[in-house]
Length: 127
Image (spheres, rainbow, N blue to C red):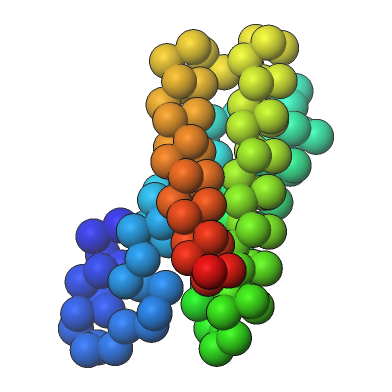
């Protein structure tokens, strides 16, 4: 993540989403999602996890790009739903065996944080 931050600093340009902690944590989780499930034997779960983890990041960014508070809240809630979906994939991967308990706990911890932050952001936009 440091290289992306350094690049933003070097260029001197930052977007609104770059300033959100939830965006940073979502990108960190996406990196976890990329490596947590093996390519073989879990193709369906892996594909679902990668699509949902990407959706978190992309919907946060899209929400940041909107001006209307209601639209921002809408995209933050979609991102929140994708985070909950990722948690369900992690649960299935744990019960089916390809994810170790420590990796599950770490990933779920990141997702809980993301859901909490997105809930607060969406409520703030709806107020």
